[in-house]
Every structure is written in structure tokens, then in C-alpha cells.
Amino acid sequence: MPLLLGILLYSCNPETEVQSSVSADDKFDAFKESFIEALWAANPDWATYVGYYKYADVLTIPNEEAKQKQMEFIQQMRDSVALFPPETLSPNNQTDLKMIINYLDKTDWELNVFKLDEWNPASYNVGGSINRLLISDYAPLDDRLRDMMKKMENIPAYYEAAQANIKQPSLEYLGLAQQQNQGARGIFEGKIVDSLEQSGLTDDEKTLFKERLDSSKKAIGQYLDFLTMYQKQNHDKEDGFRDFRIGKELFSKKFEFDIVSEYTAEEMYNKALAHKADLHQKMIKIAHEIWEKHMGNTPKPEDELKMVHELILKVSQRHVKREDFIKSIRGQIPELTAFVKEKDLLYLDPTKPLEVRPTPEYMRGFAGASISSPGPYDKNAPTYYNVTPLDHYTENDAESYLREYNHYVLQILNIHEAIPGHYAQLVYANKAPSLIKSTLGNGAMIEGWAVYTELMMLEEGYGNHEPEMWLMYHKWNLRVTCNTIIDYGIHVLGWDKEKVMDVLLNEAFQEKAEADGKWRRATVSQVQLCSYFSGFKEIYEFRENLKEQQGASFQLKDFHEQFLSYGSAPVKYVKELMNE
Ligand code: ZN
Ligand code: ZN
Image (cartoon, rainbow, N blue to C red; front, side, top):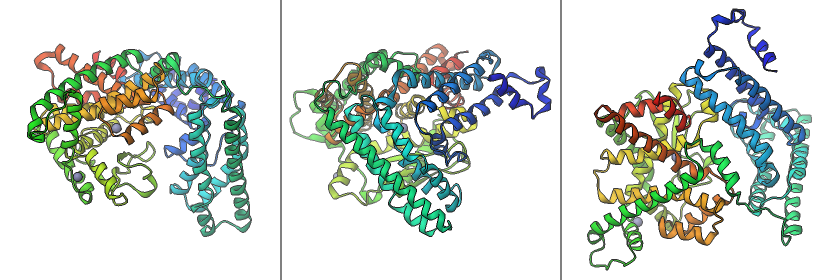
């Protein structure tokens, strides 16, 4: 198969017949193109999600045949990558090669060992991909409706296969599947029907479309019935549901594939514990220093963590007005840019401005801020900093939200999301364009960089070393630290909700609503919560080591620019390249 692939690739280009004149990098670039194309063919929904619409009308039925095809894809690609000795490739391609191999190993493991498709009923949901065709404007409405129609043809078979795959679900994933598929059913009723009426489809097409809408709704309904029935029949059976906790062996392996760290999951957990203790000591010290300034004669609680908590609540009262929320975020971006320039921390490309906008309605489901980056197939689209306005909040909810994102935290958030966090990293990643990295990009590196910049900016003097700023920073950093601690605690050490709530409420000073949400998230995900702290810790340690080695010649700006120049590759790979 790899040979055949080679012939297909090169036969249209006579120049490449003289093998020796083609560099290894050129060959590898051609291979990467064929890899991506095959990846999209094998994963049509993923392709549509990143803005590649060639397979927009395809819905893969998740049956045994589909799994066989996935395995064939993996085998073919493994044979192909074996033809490229890493040392013959450029640094950019070396990291791409490693990322492809990691993706193949990970997918193999997911299909044959982890088998989430057998115990996570929420893996099956057609709502998102149908909705995407409805709201994206990649083609005129009529064409998009025809793509949807083609796709809907397979929906009944899709859910039949889903039912057949479910062996022993976890109760938590089953609940999630019920909730999400109820939402999915709604997509076949609302806007889609109006769009059909307004379209230029023929009457026959419209009739067929409506039939498929009905059979889709029916298929989802039957799947929901199946889930309800499963729950009823198994709720008191001992082996009816598997534990959502995946245990040490699976967690460690998933950590290796997803984080790609120099450290094991257990080592990272221990680092997070030590980091938490260190943060607590720093917060206690600050609290003693500024207690009176903020609390006057109020007696200090004897329990020092309680003292810290009370002070945090007080300091959080300094926040912007709800109507000024977006405006003040917009105003901070130029300040951050000026600071980065003044301190010479990183070159920021002035031709790539960042636009702060209210989060579009269709993206609003959750509060907060996010960065919308142009996908790999839409590079010239602008980058947006989405901020959800607080208009629809009740007075109480707005107040609680504003205290959470108070005067200090709001600035840290802007560092994280925008400058020099996610947004700046993205501009650098696009300078070394790699479809592999924008597709298989490493979440721990991406999040780790944003978390790293928060500390780096404060160390360089952003916020004038105000103790209140440091106090709130430490609280903010406790959040990602405890994400790692509870993820490992729950899945590997078997922690229950009570233990987790104790950590989040009393040691990370979170509100109950946030802690509840975090517990829930940890029961329907694994390892993802570790990515923020893991990436942060590795970047920071790496920087400190380099500083020590290089002494006076160490330049922060050079470190940042070189670090970012490899794109969104795992920190471990970037380290290897920078150490060469
Ligand atoms: Zn207030
Ligand atoms: Zn982030």
C-alpha cells in the first residue's frame, strides 16, 4: 500500500522520477498532504469541523466495517512513515512526523484498548455535524441542504450501529448522551424547516428532505428509548454500568498519548501537589501582610486557609461595572501590547490585529471568553476574542460573575486568552504553517503556553507587583493546579465527590457552582483537565533550566520566540529541538 500511495503521488509529476533530486523534506511534504487527505476521508465529520467540506455529505456508520477501515488506514500510514528516517528531515517536519506517529498509536489504542465507543453512549450524536452545515456558509443554502439530505440518509443505520456497540456504559456518559441527543433531536425541528421552505429545492426534494427529517428524529428517539430502557433494566445490577473512573493503567497510557510529556501521570500529579502547597504558602504570606488594609479590625481566622479565603472574597469586590465588561477588555489589549513591547518579551506582529467582539449567539451556551482562530482552511479570516456580554444575567448572577472576573483576574484572563497568551501563540504557529500541527496540535502545549504567560507577565512587573494582584494570580493558578490533582485523584485514586469538593472549595477557594461543574466534567472526561498544568509546568521548568545553563547570555525574548517557532508541538519535542 505505501508503494501504491507513492506512485499515485508522484506519477503526475515527471520531475520527481529522478529520486535523488527530491529532498527528503519534499517527499515528506507530499506524504503529509496525502496523509491529511486520507485522514479527512476516514473522518468526514472532523474534516467538516475544521472547515474542509469535501465530505460534508458523508455520515460514517460506526459499524465493524468502519473500524476495519480505520485499522487499515493506520497500518498504511505506519508503513509510509517508516520510510522517513527522522534525522533526514527539517525540525518542523521531524515534529510533524512524531505527531503523526503519536496520532496513529493513540488511535490504535483507542480503537482496540480504550474502546470508548463501547461505554460512552454520548460518542454517538449527529446534531453537531448537521447543525454545522446549517450555520456555516461554505456553499449556497440549496447545496448545503442537499449535503444534509445525503447525510441524513444514514442516520437510522448510524443509531442502529450505535446501539449494537454499547456494551457496558458508565452512568455518567449515559446521562450525558440522553441530554445531548435530546438537544440533537431539536435541531431537526427548528431553523432547518424554515430554511427548507425558503430554499430553491424542488417539491420532490422537499418531500424527500422532510421524510428524512422524520426518520432522523425517529432514529434519535429510538436511541433515547434504548438508553432509558438500558438504565431501567440495569440500575440495580452489579455489572450493569462500568465505573466512569478509568484506573491507573488506562489513565497513565492516555496521559502519554494526549499530553506527550517527559513525565508520567503520577509524577505530574506529585508536582501538582507540591505546587499547590507552594501556592498556599505564598498566599498565606500575602494575606498576613495585607489583612488589616482590607479587613480592618476583623479578627484573622485561626485557620490560615480560611484567612486567605476571606481576604479573597473581599478583594474580589473590586470589579468593573457589568455594562463596561466588554469595553474594559477591549481597552486592556493595547496596554498588554505596550507592556510586551516595552519589556521586550516577544515580537508581536502589528499586521495581525485582534478584534474583541461579543460572542455570537450560536456560540453562547456557556459564559466567558474564548479565542476564535481561523481554521487551517481559512487562514486569512480574522481572529476574534469572543466575550459573552452580561446583558441576559440576573443582577445576582452578574455580580457573582464579575467578582469571579474581578479587576485583577480580568487582566490575567486577557493575558491568557490574548496577549501574549493564546492569540500571540497562534500568530507564531501560523508563521510556520503545518496542517499537521493545526490538526493534531498538542493541547498541553497550547494551554501550557497561555498559563505560562500569566506568571511570566507578573514576574516582569505587569500589575506593579501589587500584593492583591499576586494573591488573585495564585488563586487563579490554583484552579489549573487542582484540575490536575482532582483528575488523577478521581480516576486513579478513586476519590469520591466529597473529597473532590473539599479540595476545590477549601483548598482552591472555588464557588460551589464552579466546583460542581468541575466534578461533573471530570466524570465525563479523562486527562484533558491535566493539560493546563502539565504544559505550564514543563515550559516553566524548561525555561528555568536554560536560564541556569546560559547564565548572563539568556534572553527571555529569544527563548519565547524560539519556543513558539515550532508551532503547536508537544513541549517535549520542542525541548528536544531547542536542546540540540
Ligand atoms: Zn460588586
Ligand atoms: Zn486557554
